[in-house]
Amino acid sequence: MAEKISLRKRKKFRARQTILNAAAQQFELHGFAATSIAGIMQAAGLGVGTFYNYFASKEEVLLTLAKNLRERVEKSIAAAREVNQTSSELLELCCVCSAKLIDENRFILPLFISASEHSDKPEQIPQSLSPGFRQLFEEIILRGQACGEFRSDVPPNIIAELIHSIYQTTAFSKLEISFQENIRLKVKILLDGIREKNFL
Image (cartoon, rainbow, N blue to C red):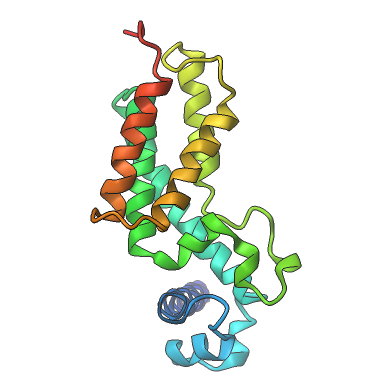
């Protein structure tokens, strides 16, 4: 009996993952607004009715994909904390990792700009429909300010908003430089500006 339950759980997990993978592919190819649930399920090789066993809407699928990306960044940060990296190093790592994931999963990028313009029913999209990197930025900044590594004359949410805006400007950049390198260099300049000069 236990084996049957375990097999059923594995099958459900695989089906859910198949839907997520197919959705990511379709969002990448067609954009969020132009992707239909039917198109996702056709790409997944599953019936449309199966979709609703796992998700209530395509917005929920997008939110799940965004959360998965955030979790990957959080794991990288957790590993860096284990080796006692500074807040500057953690913030740079967070920005570099998130830039890499966004670059590899471009369907997430519009969430940094405006989630509402990518849905037929913007009022149904949670306001927090973003990978949540901005919250990670703010947590690291708060940690850096608490230990005197970052200047405290600017509120952490302002600094986090400034970092967040880097992704927006880079999305429209015409410079002949990669998305990831563009963000890395901008973050380096910003870090120089918020670091306390006498921090050891």
